[in-house]
Amino acid sequence: MGGEETAPGDRLRRLEAVTDAGLAQLGVDELLDELLERVRELLGVDTAAVLLLNASAQYLVATAARGIEEEVRQGVRIPLGKGFAGRIAAEKRSVFLERVDHTNVLNPILRDKGIRSLLGVPLLFGGTVLGVLHVGTLTPRRFSADDTSLLQLVADRIALAVHARTTQVERTAAGALQRSLLPAALPDIPGIEFAARYVPGGQGEVGGDWYDVFHLPSGAVCIVVGDVVGRGLPAAIEMARLRHVLRAYTLETTDHADLLGRLDRQVRHFEPEVMATVLCAVVDASGEHMRISAAGHPPPVISAGADLPAAILDLPADLPIGVGTTNRRRTSTVALPPGTAVCLYTDGLVERRRSSLTAGLDRLAEAMSAGPAETVCAEIMKHLVGADPPTDDIALLVLRRRPLPESEGDTLELELPALSSSLKPLRIAMRRWLEHVRADRQATADLLTAVGEACANAVEHAYGPVGGTVSVSLKYRPPDVLVTVADTGRWRAPRGSFRGRGLTLMRALSDEVVIERTDTGTRIQIRRTTTEGGPR
Amino acid sequence: MTVEHDSDDTARIALAGEIDMDNARQVEQQILGAISNQLTAVTVDLGGLDYIDSAGLRVLFTLGNRLSTLQITLRLIVPERSTVRRVIDLSGMAAAIPVYSS
Image 1 (cartoon, each protein chain N blue to C red):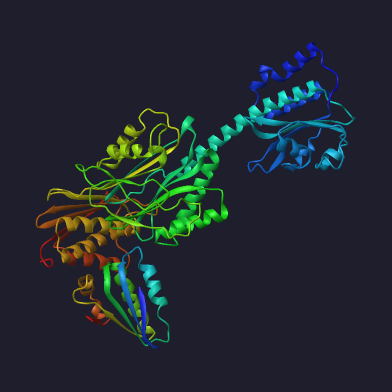
Image 2: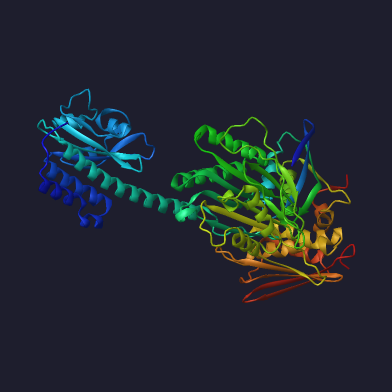
């Protein structure tokens, strides 16, 4: 390159111009414009431009320019490794072209503009190339070593600002993605309670961990915990894709080993670079069993009762998603007797530097108990995370099958949305409770229908389109079951003969029915004996 | 729900699971979809049902009306020991559609 040395006074002036503390006040876009303007002046060049590598790292995009603004306006793209700028980015070194011609410059704008000489340097941050800064002249020009150094100094400054902005934007976006996708409220399922935690990894950076809980059309509940390998925004985006794909497949298949197989094929076809571990559990509509399939995911920990030690479930560890497998995936069935708690989590919870995974699992089993889900969740976080700064993000989901009432006088209390879709969960909860109070077969069937009709009445007549809730309480007063179904809507006369049939049925199946209608709601009380063949 | 054709002009529809206000319309569509106008007789077997509410009863009453218009004979099978027998009996179904135990 060569060229004459810069005088010491000039050199200082030049340095000050590009390291000026005032520049720190500017946003990235203003900083780019300001620095390009100063560079143009200091080096006496006609054009200055910044191209940034796009997210896929496949090509450079013109982002800021002075004297050659059309580059930005036209969204010039230069493939990595091709042409002048592409070569600088690929080789991570400065390139000087004394004479621009068709063979060494790809971008027609540079040629059309009549640019004769070009000097470019890479934007580097921590050894990674973020883009290219180049300057050009309309007359042939030789750049000195000092010119190149100055340009590199400016490039470093730009790289720092661009990196900081990218990081900030990505963190904000990844955080927003996580927040929008983790269920804000876990589904309300009679007889089952949930609690969950999500904690970002080191320096508050979110990653690809997620949990999800949703109803299946069958009335069963699907629970998913997963972990996409990687960090930050790319992992969070991938997590979002996997979560949706998995949800979509749950409508297509009821076999969740098959579900994970489909997810795996989908990922390998569309996102071959992605790897994830996923655990999928389905609690059947009665709440009595949970079927689990795991794809490379750490095993759930289960606690069957307050006095029993928690156990790490021994599941077949099938391959993670995205690595390819021809083996059929497996499903295990776990019984969930009342009072059982299960803990699902991602590896961030149990993995620590300087400590083995086995030790982490043992600590988890020790911290796990069969208490209320919220308490179990808090205890686990307290014992496994405490005040340690997390290195990896952590997702934790605890579910517990509620213990059955212990004394005969116990009650079943439910608060349900006044929707027809509440009727099935109501029957599930009632069957379980009636079994517990040893109601006979006919009493169970009659109570299910009578209470179902009372609730259907509230669903149909109590509220306007905005909706409301219906509360159901069952009390066992041997030998009777006393039921109260209450809504807070305004009574209106039933429409159509069919609701009339429902009320007739309700009366016929019960020993006693009392309906109270007030301005503040309707209350239906039903009494039915549990031991005789039918109402007297 | 399963559908069997005993011959070209008769069908036997076996219902299973639960029918309530939430899925009654869907069940109704499935039953109607299984009945072509070539049929002369349809049997609906409720032996496998675990639950039926008044919305489900309405589906059966409506079906009875429709098939009567189409001159297709409808009969119900409700085994004595079946879970829904009592509700069917109380509903007065037998006055509209012949109910058999087997």
